Amino acid sequence: MNDMTYPSTTERVKSWLEGSVLHICFNNPAKHNALSVDMWEAVPLLLDRAEKDDGVRMVVFSGAGEKAFVSGADISQFEDQRAAKEAVKKYEQMAEAALEGIYEFGKPTVAAINGYCIGGGVNVAISCDIRIATPNSVFSIPASRLGLGYRVSAMRNLTHLVGPGNAKDIFFTGRRFDAAEAQRIGLINRIASPGDLEPLLKEYTDAITTGAPLTIKAGKRIIREVLKPDADLDVEMCRRLILDCFESEDYAEGRRAFMEKRKPTFKGK
Image (cartoon, rainbow, N blue to C red; front, top):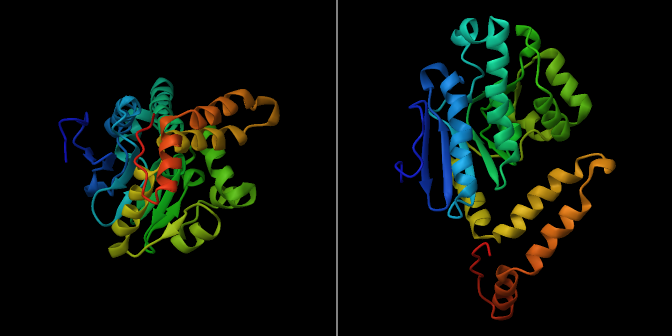
């Protein structure tokens, strides 16, 4: 662990490096990791640094304790942060910067969910590339019960994952549902018991961090691009990313390793 390399701006977000994996842990267990202002603010700063660091190949988001990933926004801050019109604007800009920062991050992101994943917790999770969860995890977007407006980016991510019918069901009712349903509708990828969540996470981190970084980065970017309408699709950018992979040292290393029947060592070059 190297806390000095990736220091967080708040004690309510813990961050550390484990090999080439940056861990970002929401650390507000007394409130089931409800997101406070300083927690939102910490995320983009960590991601900006990780984006530029070739030593970081992926980011894992988690929640401290055994009860929650993120249980939503810190309601105690609503009066100060959301009551006035200007405060609402500032709060939404801050949350949007964090969530778009996760969504736009060029390297793979995984949300490891154990327990409550409510409101803003769902938004964080669906901004990530991959979501794994324990069977006891509980999901909900209770905006309709709070009178909140919901940002376009969150609706986009939700609809892309679960389809418009399920998105409307989740959003209109604000109901809670379990991990089995979340997996069935496509909100999460895989389920593991609490004792097996870490081993499952390690499967992902091992596979991703030993894969070819340029290939993975290109795949992530192209998948995001093909979700756009055809008129907005940047085909030339996609072709450049593909060509960069074929012209890379890693492609040559992959071919050699295959011929020599050994595991490749990729450097992201």
